Picture (cartoon, rainbow, N blue to C red):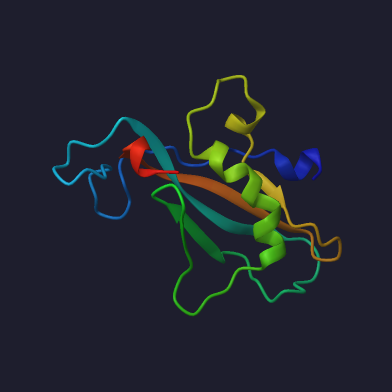
Length: 134
C-alpha cells in the first residue's frame, strides 16, 4: 500500500445508526458496556483495469461487530476483502488522535494491474455488550 492510496479524508463519523436503530443493541434500548462503529467499505476508484468485475461504488457493510453484508446480488472480491480486513477491527473503535489509522481511510487491493482503492467509512456508532462478543 502506498502513502497516496492510504491517505484519505476520513470517513463519516456519525453517532447514530444508519439502519433506523437508536445505536443500541440491548433489548430495552439501554445498550451495553462498549461502543463500536458500523462501517461501509466502498470501491473509491479503480486506476487500472477491473480484473475482478468490481466497479466504483461497489461496497459491503460491517455492522454489529462482525456481520458482513453485501447488497443483494452483488459481490466483493475476496482479495480486496483480504487487503482491508486486518484494519476493520481497529476502524470500529475509537483511536488516539495521533494514530495514523484514525486519519487514513483508503486501502488498496493487492492486484497491481487493477489498482483498486477502497474507502472505509464509519456509518454509525453502536452500543454493544462485550460479554455477547467473542
